[in-house]
Image (cartoon, rainbow, N blue to C red; front, side, top):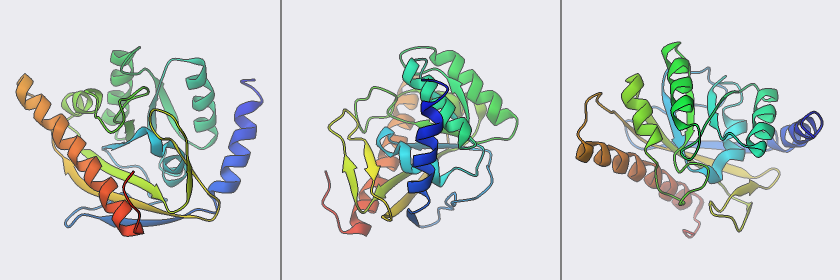
Length: 216
């Protein structure tokens, strides 16, 4: 399964993904990361439901993604490798410290880290501590974005996982970047986590509005 399934998924996903049309919007004063852009030295955060369009949007960035230490995680890692991404293993529930240190090493070398802010298990639309901890460790800014397809299948899962339809338009909405100082009190840490959470949600709301869709 590990030898065959990732290549089949990669082939199908690449074929459909190349039909998607990305449209970038951003809050005033925000410089977004563009499709096809080489990696920069920062942390990009989004909700777990956007994994599929994110993989195509960032496919040329050579970014590193945090993937859970599970069998499903191993399958995803092999698919990501075929798409040109790197991966470190860990999650908020298992191997979190090792995963954060792996991402920090990537950032220290000038690379890009991509983070599903609500983790592998949710709750949906709620930022975990990991992105803010990584920003503290690395001194790198946190980017907040959302990818919303005009037409997609929305699964009945905890994250309302999105499977964009072929040839659909996908709005990539960017919000303000979050700067995290190295030294924070517990209260300040919570404030930064809520600041990042609010930024990703603003990006999601703007994407829905841009497409003229009702919020779900």
